[in-house]
Image (cartoon, rainbow, N blue to C red):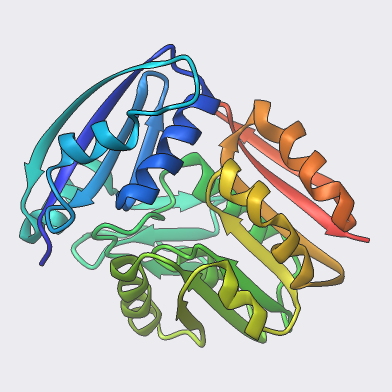
Amino acid sequence: MNDYYRVRVQASPCTADITDLAAAFMADAGFESFEPDSEGLTAYISVKVGDGTSVATEALADFPMDAKFEISAEFVEGQDWNEEWEKHYFKPIVIEDRCVIHSTFHKDVPQAEYDIVIDPKMAFGTGHHDTTSQMVQHLLESEIEGKSVIDMGTGTGILGILAAMRGASKVTGIEIDEPAYLNALEHIKLNGVNMEAIHGDASALEGLEPADIFLANINRNIITADIDRYADRIKSGGKLYLSGFYEEDIPVITEAAAPYGLQETGRKVSNRWAALELTKN
């Protein structure tokens, strides 16, 4: 099991643009997952990469926006992750009274139409964050039966797993982070669904056929940078579901998507976080 540093970054001022860009810079430096909030963000990095405080400080040293950061870190033993999630983060959750998400260590799990088992370790996607739950809601409301699905940045695999449970004909998840990719493979087997996982970045899309439904719960900067690749792998009339950004970022997303024939056809917003449905004309 990998040991990690939990790094806290207090931002002043703190805006969605600042935390998104800080997360992008830190991801390039080796950080694996992020929990943004109204005062900054919490990020995780393997001890194999380096000291959490030092790596974060260096990553944000040439930050291009007017912001100051206070950075601190604490060591987290890898073998304690299930216990940590159970104590502090991950409780069983029911979404739309139809989908229950829980871990193998949970007892007295509520009954629901779709039962998804997730042991998240360091991978993002338990359903508790607004962006994941919004994407789950979109999938529960969409016609999935018999359709092909690509899940970009699959994390724990939760969205692809739900799509497979709802009758998708083919589901492919792509994940750049190796521990998260391995975690997704575990969850695919654990939930007994037909889903393929690929370890790679957006370049992996080049080998895939266009899909009816494309999912990307990542962050604003990555989405706008790769939107052309996403659009190229969506069938005409297909759906693109996006999240990982704030409501005030929606105009930036829709402006970036418009040149590729992607028009907004729905949205969900909660606690400032947003999830968009776009349709390819």
